[in-house]
Length: 95
Image 1: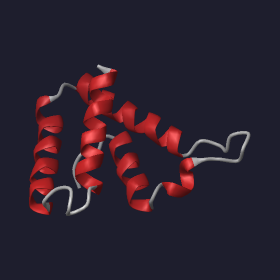
Image 2: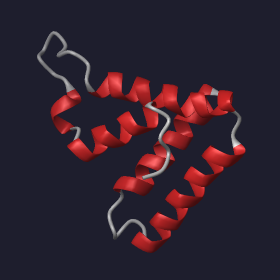
Image 3: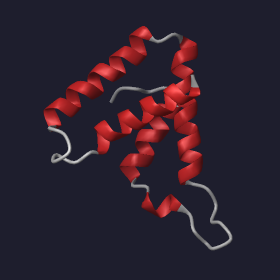
Image 4: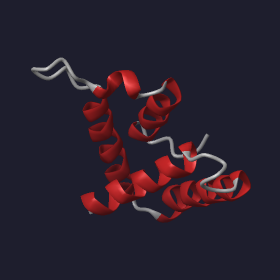
């Protein structure tokens, strides 16, 4: 189930942060709303926990301490992206 949650999170991420050239904004909004509705109304509590865990793991990866070469991806993570992941990690799939 973890792999499926990772894929769902990647799709949700794409819908939220893709450019207008990649996907029509109206289509993206409809897909975001549909996905959030499905998660909130069709997933069991255990199934909703999986995307939350995927978001927590993604946050941990983005915010990890610098490696031995001083690299960390945290400076590449925008405030909107961080807020998105934090919201999912807290179980907020809409808004």
